Length: 113
Image 1 (tube, rainbow, N blue to C red):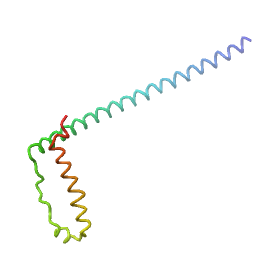
Image 2 (cartoon, helix red, strand yellow; image 1 turned 30 degrees about the vertical axis):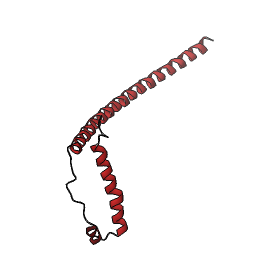
Image 3 (cartoon, rainbow, N blue to C red; image 1 turned 180 degrees about the vertical axis):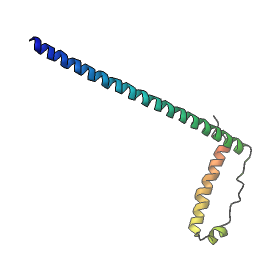
Image 4 (cartoon, helix red, strand yellow; image 1 turned 120 degrees about the horizontal axis):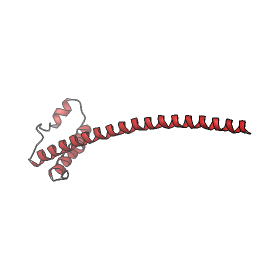
């Protein structure tokens, strides 16, 4: 009976040692992951500050009456480059109208905090 108890005790001590090693490894791994996540958060905060600064600059330029400095090219220009009328219409209706809408929204305070 005593030998049986000693074997159980020895086995339990072995299990306890393995569990302690596993726990130590998990704690170290968790610590590394936590530090990596903190670094990621700081990088995201920095990116966010830079984006907010850029957005404020853009909004202030729009409110100052900023105009796009390049003239809209006539259809003949695009035709000479090989674009068909349908593609040119898509440029005017799609892209340029969306650009005008975005600038108008900025101009009228959509980006104000």
